[in-house]
Length: 187
Length: 305
Image 1 (cartoon, chains in turn orange, green):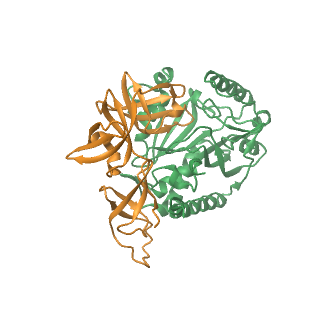
Image 2 (cartoon, chains in turn yellow, cyan):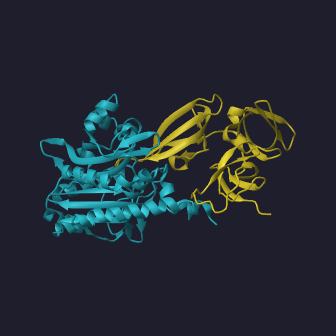
Image 3 (cartoon, one colour):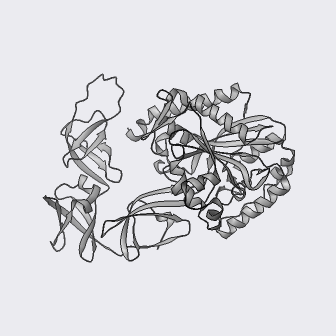
């Protein structure tokens, strides 16, 4: 059983018999009023979006889903293909269901696939992934424009802001929970 | 190097500059800067404000009680910039430890403070505006023109399908405020909403001629609550009754009880008619530096420690 204190992005709960994923969450408190927990949830089967505001004291049932260790194999048109490490079964997911995780899916990446009635409905990537920078403008030494970051494209096609000293071909660590640059891989 | 910390340098610089401008504004106007203890034996008793206990004392949820004792002792104009703590408040606009500006004036009411708040914000915002407009997300907020003002009752009439009275009765006041009213306030100019339901203003004076509302206002800019003000209640008997009522609401929601702030109650009858206001510094810095979350305007969040 979850309480409102457990609410956060990524939490999976059961609502009216369906599994829901919390995709946005914020704490609100209108001028000295009661604490409110604003959530945006996605039905993990139909994909429909639901806005709900909860108050302190409300509780939630966790979604009864099965998590399985898999690895990402390859992308085929608009589908992503994963394989169960234990029994070599393959599962397919469309791009929309994969969501932001597509930014981090490189061949053989270990992931957790979420199954609901033997259908893959969500993918969890590791908190940190190493990706190679395939395009970024060089840093001009002595640049006084004062900019503290620049855009870079990594091998999955994802574009993010990195510190100016990062060069093309470097491996960087990305925090997949925020989508932000974390550090460079040394050596 | 902690890059996440290093990249905040520009905003933290502006934050320091804003704090300096605020001090200049108040000192120029004859306000005394005061520094009252953060650790207090009894916080103001309010239904939905939870203090953090520290030994047998509490970390202040606001410096309000000490500030009013100073007013009662004859200090006419006071301001304070301090940290306040509110348990379990964490979101894109909330930190459990945050920075508050409070100022108090004797021989004044909430109308006087509305004017002074306009002057403060216009003055501070000037150097962060583009041709008099503050740009927040896709909104252009006119900082030099007229501010809009509407009563809470009218806000419900305008933005919801129910009335303020019905919303209170159905316990929908806060939800409607959060979902249907707040996001639309202050999008083109700063907006003041005033005359809150009497039961939503534990330390404010009831409006003469309309006992259903209290002389309380809130300032909104870009859909964000920035400040909360009252004409102060200076009647110890009524204040004690209100605290008892707030304690009952706390007990009903199984929130910890607080001791009665007796020294405050013993002195507030001596407080001249006064008005006071609390403004969130972190949120002001968010607005003036275009930050999307409160995390961006402080060096460390609790999660960073």
